[in-house]
Length: 134
Image 1 (cartoon, rainbow, N blue to C red):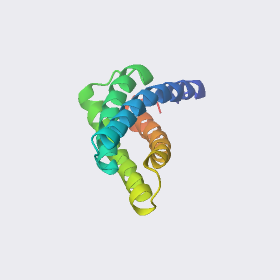
Image 2 (image 1 turned 180 degrees about the vertical axis):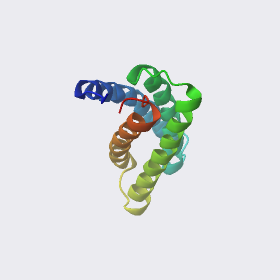
Image 3 (image 1 turned 90 degrees about the vertical axis):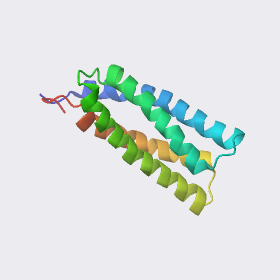
Image 4 (image 1 turned 120 degrees about the horizontal axis):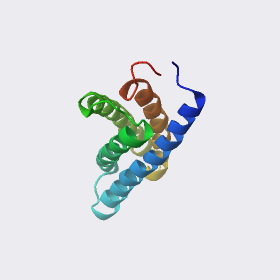
């Protein structure tokens, strides 16, 4: 049975709240590393993204998708998507900061929005998809 619009809307809203927390972890790591420890922005955002992704996985598994899937099934899928979208995030920050010379926080906001939508679609359709639902 196809997933209803209401279910998708609810999941997207929860995914957004979970993502906001993961983004807070990501940005806090990014800013602390760049501003306090003078780490290069691309490296700092990569580490921040990884920490945010871990928080997102745990919260999405439990709250967004109320998944019954074993972590051994959903975890690697989520990780693969996180690595792919993390790479996209890193490439976007690299292009914006190192090539275009834009402010790293402005570039990160655009990268975050792009990665957010892509993550929701991929995790809905693959990571947490129940066998009979989309």
